[in-house]
Length: 221
Image (cartoon, rainbow, N blue to C red; front, side, top):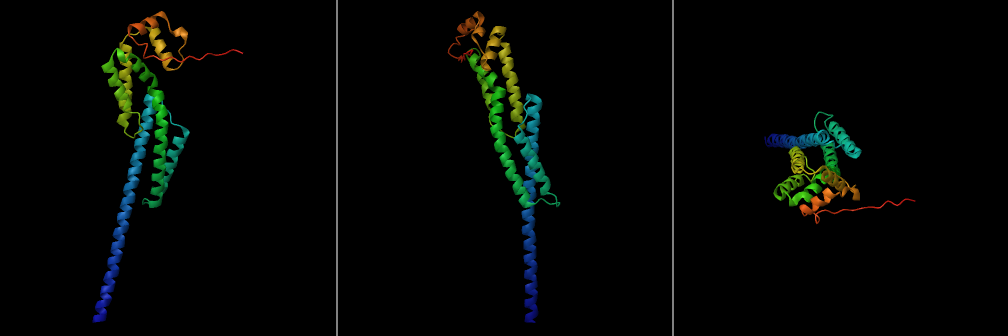
């Protein structure tokens, strides 16, 4: 009687351990599945941002970024080959995604500068004319200076650049002045750009202290 009761308890304990193991494995699998879904969602957001930048601002990604994305896609596909997300593969994919974001952040610093540099420089030059509106434009543009997966940030940047250009165009500047500002912002300004109209405009708007020119002299051999 005592022996049979002990055997029953041993069996019950074994069944309990099996149940606990199943529950622990299920909890771990649920965590892995959740992480996998998050990675897929984040990669989708990254792709949306890239597509928007390409279509709206003609910004193409470097090959290193495209290669990292393809490697991440391959890793995510491999992770679910068995039907359930594999913990090690998901962990590897998570590392690849982190590297992708680090490189994208570095890449965006240059892209942001190239995209906004000329407009921002012009806004700073004319800030004495429309200071309130200029500062508002500059603040909105600056909100996108850091890489993010938030698509609205880049949409707002495009709108802010449009508003800034409308503000600049709305000043009705003489074509010579516009050409001067464009050449100055691109580093191509020469003494020929400093026409009487440009010089008079600089004096009238008291902009001489806001404009910095850098000239290089080409020596002929």
